[in-house]
Every structure is written in structure tokens, then in C-alpha cells.
Length: 241
Image 1 (cartoon, rainbow, N blue to C red):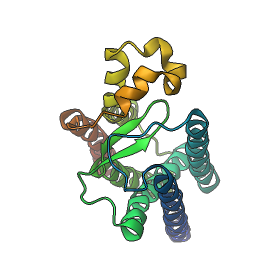
Image 2: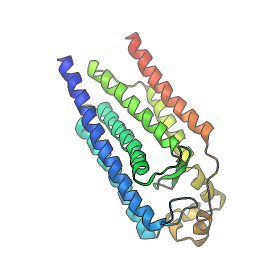
Image 3: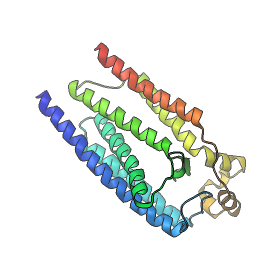
Image 4: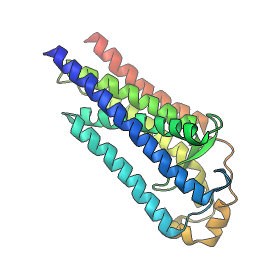
């Protein structure tokens, strides 16, 4: 019975890997089209502000991507923890192969330290390419560990410390990604105009001259360390059991 369950899990991971790879390539193709329109000479900083309608369309595209990944997790898992694990697993595969596809199609990025525009919701996320790849590897690893342990023990759950480590780590990493634009918004008093920033001439002028230089590596590493603590805690607890 356990052997059959493990076979199903392996098949499930294989299916999700194929789905994630295909989705990553599709996402890359869409981004290539957008870059060709907005950056015909090649994507680079400073960023060009998209018109309001285009930003709205990009938001819908990003929300649709997350909904698709969420639904895949819901369909694939039995419990909440398994559904969550399959979601982050597919997310990680998708994100890694998004960059693989960009490298194959347009030979971008030039290095793992190349800065990229990562996301637009709730504000623009920025960071070197290696940062989301590290996050993807963490998500894939965590998902595989959780699903395999939940197959061996149907009562397996994360304890409150493991949830705290994981969520706190993810939140700190999120803050490192939105730090640049948050600094622009708060430093220049744009917080009261947060819903109409794409129409504010002063904000557009700042954004279209802004080139990120330093990434918050210390904070990012702290976030990664907390997630690793979550993983180590899970493995240590399972070894004792």
C-alpha cells in the first residue's frame, strides 16, 4: 500500500514538473513579446513606465499565473499541507524554467547577478536573478520533504515554530524584493498617491531614471536561513520519531 502511494507521489511530482516547465516557457515567451514592445534595444534599467491600461493587464496576467499554480496544488494534494506543498513545488519549477527559457531564446540574463523586474503586485519587486532561483530551490526542497513525510505519516503537520520560521523567512525575503520601490514611495511622499502612481509625473520621472545598485543580501540571507531552520526542524523531528 505504501509502495503504491510512493509511486503515485513520484508520478505526481513528474506531472507537476512537466506542467511547471511548460508554464515557465510560456511565461518567458509572453515576457519576450512585452520586452520587444517596451525595450526593443534590450531589457535594462532604468525601467520604462507602462501605461495605466498595460499595468492593469500585467496585474491580471500575474494574478492569473498565481491562480493557475494554486489550482494545480489544490487538485494534486489531499490535505491542506499537501496542496500547499504541490503549489510551492510547481511555483519553483515554473520560476526556474522561466529563466532557462529566457536564456535559451534571447540569451538573457548575462549572469546570475543581473537585475530583473520580478513582480508588480502590490508594488514592483526588483532583485538579481539568483535571488528568485534560490527561493525556488528552497520551495521545491521543502515541498518534496513535506509530501514524502505526509505520505509516510498521515498525521504529519508542521508545528507552530516551523510555520513561524517559514512565514517569517518568506516575509523578510518579500521585503528585500520590494525595498527599492518602497524606498522611492516613502522617501518622496508618494504613499498618499499609491493608487494613482502610474499617473504621477514626478513618480514616473524618478522611476525612469532609477537604476538599482545594491541588493539587501544580509536581509535576504536571514530570510533564507529562517526557511532552512524550518526544513532542519522538520527533518530533525522526523528522525527522532
